[in-house]
Amino acid sequence: MIRTPQTETMARPDLEGLQLERLKKTVSYVYERVPFYKNALKKNGVAPEDIKTLKDLVRLPFPALQPLFALVVSGWRESGLRRKLGAIGSGSPLVSLTYQ
Image 1 (cartoon, helix red, strand yellow):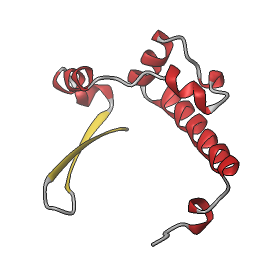
Image 2 (image 1 turned 60 degrees about the horizontal axis):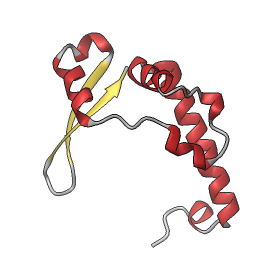
Image 3 (image 1 turned 180 degrees about the vertical axis):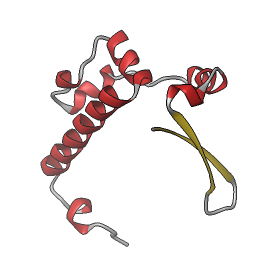
Image 4 (image 1 turned 90 degrees about the vertical axis):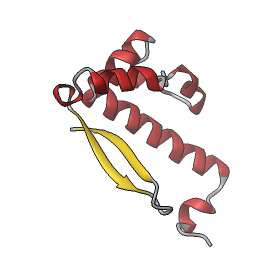
């Protein structure tokens, strides 16, 4: 079943253009609004305007879970992170962190 025919059937160059657009938007968003990611990007010498192609994805820092959990334990409320509880289709608990 195709849920979004426009994107799921687009030509490869168009899809890569869309992916690059969304990557740039996401990196800019977290850089401007999430101190944790802004610091991680700066530490790796990456700014939003440095993202020019999809190959730049390898330059982005993907934090290990340990620093995220340490942030949660050490004062996630003060950091702006909020914990959301929910469940996935199987009924298993799901915990996600959002920045507000």
